[in-house]
Image (cartoon, rainbow, N blue to C red; front, side, top):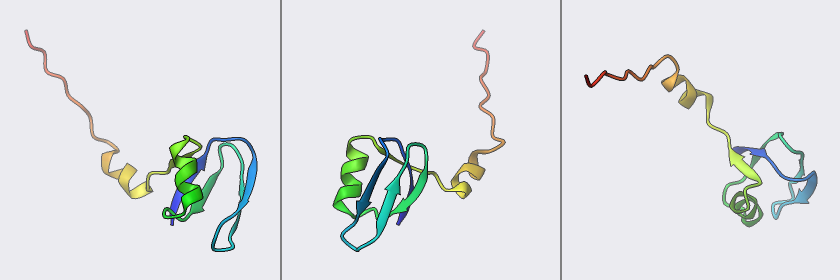
Amino acid sequence: MAKYVYQGPPSGVTLNDGKEALLFPGAEIELPEENDYVKTLIAIGYLKEVAEKNEIKQFKGKKEVKEDAS
């Protein structure tokens, strides 16, 4: 399972495993990555995977330092 943000029109679907999902623009939802319908929504840009909070913390506070080449 992976967490996604849905960016399509309001919709609802019953997945092969029997799970029902209501999809609303801007809402986060957890869906199975291996499901063909989920793969289709990703391919057309309606689902974007949400980065885990641990991944975000790794980069928090780091600064990119640019050196002056003069």
